[in-house]
Length: 446
Image (tube, rainbow, N blue to C red; front, side, top):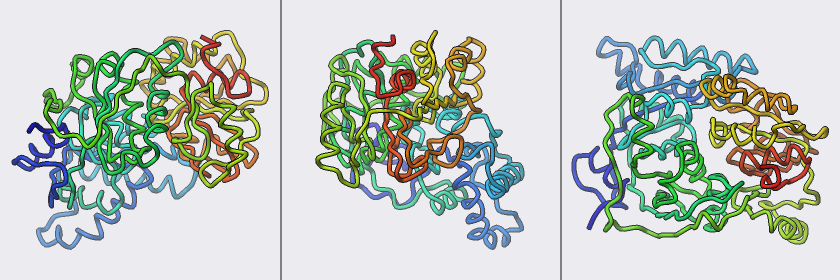
């Protein structure tokens, strides 16, 4: 019997064939990165746990391989408090001492810039101190999030411990998107179909002709939200599009990777891209996604059967809109936003915030006049960071707010007040809604 992509990656790292369900006591990793939320406490934990061990050998605390560890301040940048600023200072000083790549404030979001700079390649095992590390699966990597303690141990040893090889849920994508339908609509459709726990502890593998015709920005959007159906991670095979993307960019050797045709999968599902329409996820979870044709039905359900995960939604009005985050702040996303906003104005009752996901995206969009269109429409464009997605700054919501966002989560209190309502949608849908001041179908504006 053949192997899945994940089984192949883990087998290579441990030097023997493995199968799903097998416990790996010490799994070597390829890349490790930290943001400004978990980075500072991970550094302090590393120093506390390993200072004595390193001192016995007459050495200061160091990481397992400086080429493979990265520091990326992105969540609360520019720093909005003394605590955040001092945490960033710690990341920078520790990075200099250890010879690490430390990104500057404003360089962009961790799940974007490492891909842009060619640090993530097929066959990688990537750990990041953020649940949306699964974004990197679009590169053919096994990538998942870890917390402070696992991050600290991985920094010192280059391993993750007691790793269970996950089963794989394979999603075969067929057909092509119709006008006004995007990767965000696809992944919201999948999450709504299988449910918030529908891929629990498994890897979501996306394959098929539908994947092969997607650009890289769309692929990262899909893998980014795999965790929202409780997946361990998302992953995609290597193809010509990925190889071309990595040509002249990859900082590490590139080798194709795909699951074997006779590999064992825990489940399989086929999705026809041509049958999809724009989607909107109602608060308070991404799995509350419905196509535009069912929005009135979902509003009635929320009022008739409200609950912790589906609060009552009495109006489709929008007070705030956000385009950005590691899900949908890339170049292709801003292009679609500009198409919708061209020659139009943001509704006077709506605050639209647009944040390019990286400095490179920002500069390209600026050079090509994309940001000019967005700003002239009445949006606020901010420097590259996670922004209001994280709920810490640059657009925190009031209790009366109803926001439509291109980010990945709409949990209660995620972006500010626990009384606020957050809808998730594609960047084009966000832009259309910002114009109309209500949930709006982007196809009318394209």
